[in-house]
Length: 493
Image (cartoon, rainbow, N blue to C red; front, side):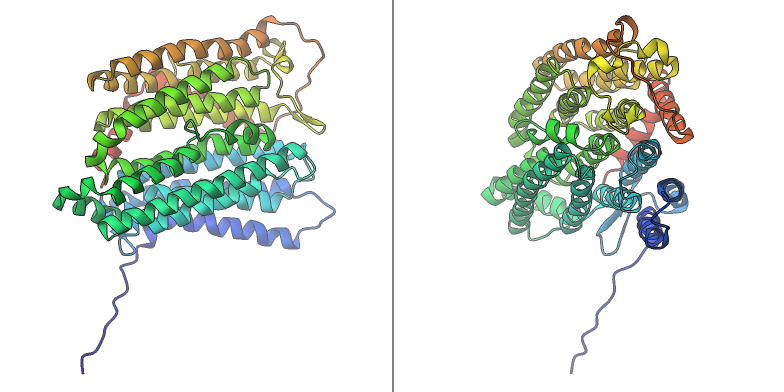
C-alpha cells in the first residue's frame, strides 16, 4: 500500500522578521492597554513602545544582507528580493514617521484610544509590507485586506466627529466594492492560467503565448486594474479620496496618503506589470488615458480648494497620474523612476501632513489655508519645512519631487509618449499655483485671527527634520536613491 507523504514548505522567518516584530509590538500595545490606569493618559508610553517596535522592524530589514538576493519562502508565498526590500524599507519608514507625528497629535486629542490606535497603525504596516513581498495572489489579497480593515478603523477614529465617521463609512463601502472587483479578477487569472503563484503565472504565459488572447486573462487584468485603481486614487475611482482625507485624523491621512499608495503601487507592479507584461499592448491605451485624466482632474479641482487637507487629497490624485506615466512607458528605467518618485512622495507628503498635525488643537484642526497666514514669520522652522514640501510637491528643484518627475518624464519621452509627457509637464505648471499659494499665505499675508501652534513634541520635530532632509537629499544627491530603486527593479522576479 502506497504511503502518502506531506512535505511542509520551507520556512524562512528572517524573510518576514519585520512583519513579526510589527505584529508582536501591536499585540504588546493592546496588552499594555488592558492593564493601564484608565484615569491616567498613557498615549505617550504606548506610542513610544510602538515607535521602538517600528524602528526595530526597520533595522531588521538589514539582517537579510547575507541571504540570497532573490529567494522564495513559505512555498513561494513570500518573495525576498531587492524589490521587496526597497518597498519594505519605505513602508517601515512611513510607519515610523506616522507614529512620530501621532505622538504630537495625541497630546491634543486625549479622547483617542491610544493602544488601539497604535496597534492599528502597526497592523496596517504589516499588511502593506506583505503586499510588497507577496508571491501569491491569495497572500496579496489577505495582505490588502489586513491593511484596508485597519485603515477603515483609523479613518473613523474621531468617533465624536461626523466628518470622521463619514470618511470611514465612504472608504469602507467603496473599498469593499473595490476588493470584490480585485478578488474576481484574481479568480479569472486563475481560470486562465491555472495558478495563483505570480512566478508560475509569468512562466505559463511565456510558455503558451496564445493565452494572451484569452477573454479570461484580459477580463482578469481589467478587474485587477479597477481594484488597484481604487487604492491608488486613479480617476475615475478617486471619489472617496477628498472626503476621507479631510475627515480622517491628520496623522491617519498622512499614513493613508503615503503608505496605502506605496503598497498599492508595489502590488500593481508585482502582480500586473511583471507577470502580465506581454499584455502591455492591451493596457497601454487605457492607462495612457487614465494617467492623463488622473493628473488633470486632480490638479484642476485642487486649484479651487481652500481646505489644505482637501487640496493635498486632490494633489495626491494628481501625483498618482504622474507615477502612472511611468507605468505607461513600461520599461525597466521607467519603473525605476516610479520607485524613486514613490520614495520622494512618501517623505514630502507625510511631511506636509505632519505640519498640519503640528497645528492640531483640542477644539479641532487648523486646516484652512487662511490659518497659515503669517505662520512663516511666526514659526520660521515650520515655515521652511512646509515650503520645502510644497516646492517638492510642485516639482521645483533642488528637491526629490523634481528628480522623480525628471526620471519618469525622460523615460516616457524615450518610449515615444511625447504628448503624455507634454500634458504631464503642463499639469506640473498648473500645480505650482496652489502649492505656492500656501507659501505666499504663510509669508506675505497678515493673519485675520491669531493662530498659536502648541508646543511640539521632540518626536514630531525629529520626524519633520528627517523628512525635510530626505526631500532635499533626494534632489541634490539622488544617485544613491536611484541606484537602490534601479537595483530593486532589475532584480524583480
